[in-house]
Amino acid sequence: MALLAFTGCDRLKSVMDRKPDAAVAQKRVRDGDYRGGVEVYESLLDGTPKSADMHFSLALLYEKELEDPYSAVHHFGRYLNLAPAGARAKDAQAAIAQCRFKISSAMVSGPLVSQQEAVHLKNENQRNIKVIAELQAQVKSLRAAASSAGVGTVPQTAKGEPARKVIPPGARMHTVGPGETLGSIAAKYYRNKARWKEIQEANFQHAEGTVKIKPGQELYIP
Image 1 (cartoon, rainbow, N blue to C red):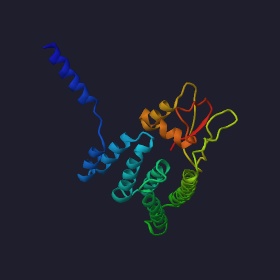
Image 2: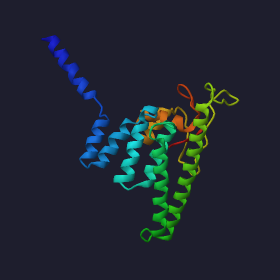
Image 3: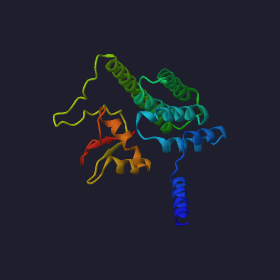
Image 4: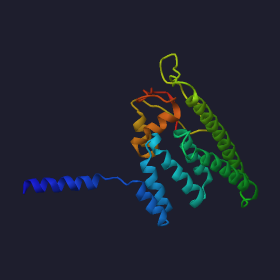
């Protein structure tokens, strides 16, 4: 009886620990619960290349169902960053261009907005254009590196730290405080410590392991 009770508890714990997967997100989307699908997909993001397809699915949701081209551009860009030579890279690049066109068209023929809102939208559009251009440059650079013979080492700073990536203009920044880690920062912004790798990859050039951050350091929060 004790063995049966232990086995039952173990099975119950396994069920409680079970996390949703992509199939759950896809079912919610099929049922028309697009926000619910976004929530599940975002819970599966871990900043590694295996989550590239999740970013692509999120981008399609934002573009096609939620009509949010700004968020779509962000997730298409994340897909290209994680899988620059992926099977959907060309589709992502084309979708980014299409989203940019939608944003520009909305600026011209959209509903009347206040002067302050118009200025904000114009600035946001300009920032997105710059971010897209930088992502495209990164994709080109990564493809050139992949086609060369051998794999080069990551550029290092004078202190032996991984080289920093270019920070997009107008990006959201965070100043590292005493005792903070990438995990605690990810929890602060995303409520998910597992997304620390996303912050690291947005700031450092393909660093192995976990980069040691210091108080006073400026980090880009994607």
